Length: 154
Image (cartoon, rainbow, N blue to C red; front, top):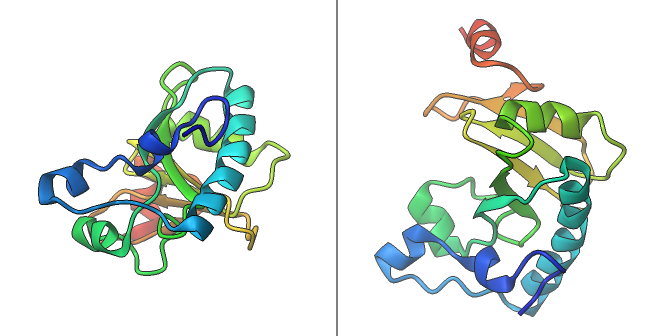
């Protein structure tokens, strides 16, 4: 099923963790509607970045989210959050900085471990910018390089 022109339900529900552990990762109808909403917003992100996005994680059931150590209030649980990379555009840090400067609606943009960008389209639209580099899950407000982050956290 297509969620939007460039994003499918199959890629949005794929999870290596779910596959490895035999966990079914299927959204209910409300979660699917949230994913369609998020996919439309993600299409705008894709057009701004001008390159395809590689989806790392999108929808997660509670079991999948728990298995990966995700936050209990994660927007991945309702289908609003997507972790992605866009190597054609640049590093995850560059993607986060660029998105933070665009006039698009989003709830959170998080630079996670300098490996991917987390974007949430939760209707709260808090405009939160966060960075995380450490396994203790300490988030710093703003988008920071690893050196800048380390100075803020230590």
